[in-house]
Image (cartoon, rainbow, N blue to C red; front, side):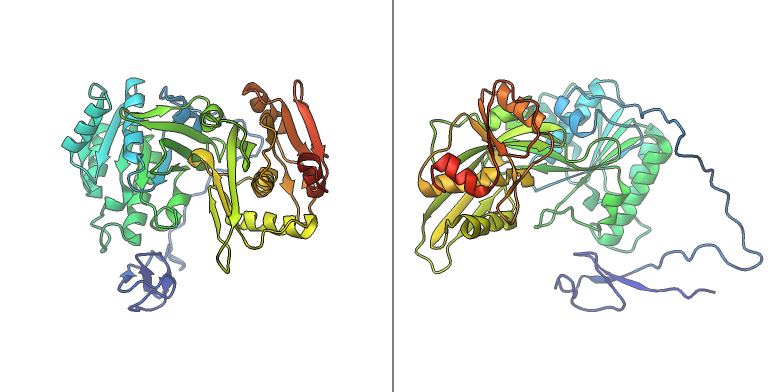
Length: 454
């Protein structure tokens, strides 16, 4: 008979330990290591052991119809979900506290309910009266959404099994507790058990489940990472408190493209959709100023134009500051090193500040040329051509490498009135009708062409 193995897990970070300890070696938290019940050892291996059933297998050529989808009428939400909500799917939504997750999901639940779905909203953080007050403020009091306030997982599953809704929103997974797990709500064991039961219910009953998840200070969804593997779709609701723009980003989607984004604007009446994000992010551009470059990017399947802003100033510190917002700081350090090593343009003794306008976050390597252009423009106090967009990846040798979906980037730029594109020499682009291309082979050629220096 297999011996039962006792597991000890940190409730703060989920790290596994062989024995109990007062302090977690992984995250350094105190009094967070707890004992968890061992997992089942599976069926016996003796002569009398019961056999499992045979799993039906099929070939790769089998034809499957696409999953049915329910549309909410909120185009940005439907876009991020991959075209609508799939019955029986499990969606996990994470975001910073106060960013608007509950507002977004209440508006989404109301939109799906008005579209004909039987929607249930269960809150573990607020009373039903508080949710009703928010619904009245958002103008959703007449939406046929049924509310509930409960944290007991057994009671929630019993209610959902009796009501058989098409959509159930659970706000949030960290507040639920199961009487089968001897741990506090929000612990690794409770979150994992609650997510497993809800996802299993969604697959068995065909109910679409939307779970709200808290995030850690690093921006990751709190709790064990296995929850993100359980669900079908993982969405992050991003934005800065000081900006009115909010971005719903898909990082995993089994029923649609990943890295898709939906853009919303926070108003007094809730979240409103932004049909043209490029125009929104560039709406405050005025006269041409040094340190400003327009990057033609791709987010999922959508081309988005954003403004990269740079400021370079003499530093009085021994170690000059490097402040980066909305971009990968490691990538920016690499571009600064390439500018100094390959082009002979030093940034030593200079403070460098970089920002993406509107609270947008850009992770594409294609933004390298726009970052370099903004840095050089700020350092030389010479504005870039105001009618030009930039994109291209910079290698460590200083060469410019082509990027994907150039035609979509150029089409979006042309639609917003840009007439020039600065792009790598080897870039294949068929959408240059009406735009004057400036092709550069490397970073040295870019400096010479744009700023008149070699």
